Amino acid sequence: MVGINSDRTAPIGIYDSGVGGLTVWNALQTLLPHERVIYYGDTAHVPYGDRPAGDIIKFSQKIIGFLSAQGVKLVIAACNTSSALALPQLVAETDLPLLGMIEPAVRAALTLTKNGRIGLMATVGTVRSRAHASFLRALEPQAVLASQACPRLVPLIEAGCRSGQTLVAAVEEYLEPLLKAGVDCIILGCTHYPLIYEVIRSVAGPVRLIDPAKAVVMQVAEKLTELRLCNETGSGRNKVYVSAGPERFKQVALQLLANQDLVGEVHAAPGYML
Ligand code: DGL
Image (cartoon, rainbow, N blue to C red; front, side, top):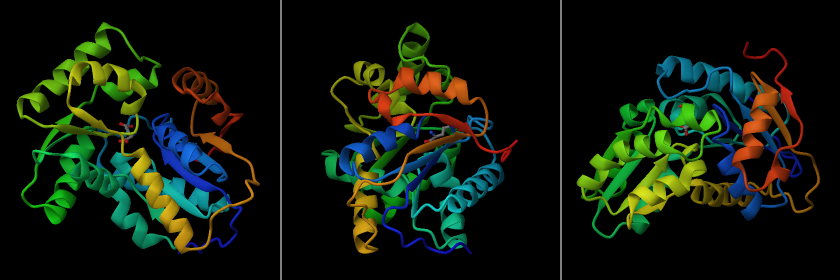
């Protein structure tokens, strides 16, 4: 069991398999600008999407152990695949407040949908877990979820691809069944997908797209308030760690993000995952 850190100025830990979690960090910076972050991108193991649940649990446990040793006060699993496959076990194993992507996404979709038909784009692992479907069933049994696994998207995004025919063709293929199912909103159920928002937008037409990052950060704000852990001074430093290829990560992150100030020096996590 890891103890809770009661230092308000302690950073928030954010982790993902790669650059996707930076979309959640972006939202955090906008909504909670005084909070500092330690970001962990598990680039040695990206993509998570096709891996067995046992691997995802093991990787996530190690990352949370690492972040905890860095003295974070709260952790955001800014990875839907980890949230879907590992979160209940991870929450049971740590005293650190640990928040994931799935429930806030489903709640946001329920607020937005008019016809009760909700689409989900996600990794193979997230779709197979049926995590969104079970939250949806619990919250609104009448609503229908149409899910589509999109395995080609994360490798393209990690390679820095944001436009072009290959990407557009993949998005068209993945969106077709969702559009045929008559969904009126689509959850971007992988934190990488908001990085290609414009491409998805152009194919999805009038269907509303839901980036759950904002809803997740609202939940973080509530949790910090409840625990009296809000950083009001803005003191502390951001840090980025990756488990492989720090230079490559930095290059892609700078290419993909609007707010380039987020990414300073990128450190190799000290032989941790390799
Ligand atoms: N960005 C992650 C997610 O939200 C992981 C994607 C992957 O590594 O396949 O699911």
